[in-house]
Length: 88
View 1 (cartoon, one colour):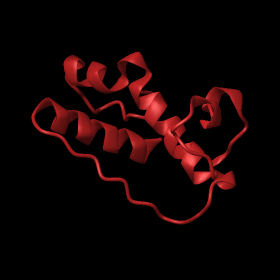
View 2: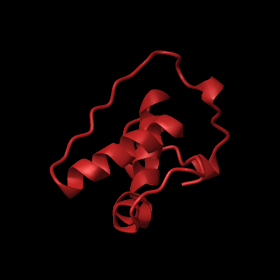
View 3: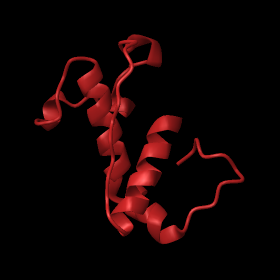
View 4: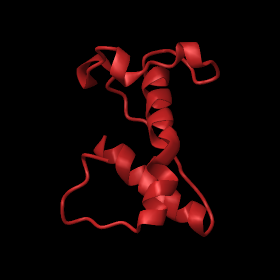
């Protein structure tokens, strides 16, 4: 994940659990689609960041809260996902 500061270190296993297999990208694309009026139930309505010109200024300015939860590995994944979404 490119936005992580250089001095932050994450265990490879935890990092792979969140960022491997496009898991993080799928969640981020779903959030962006929802904020611009789409939904996540159908892949055709999900705005792909690579295939669109969506800018942060194009998104509604309302604040949203997203809760991530988990137990054990899921809790670590939840914390990484939340931090990455904050930096995205």
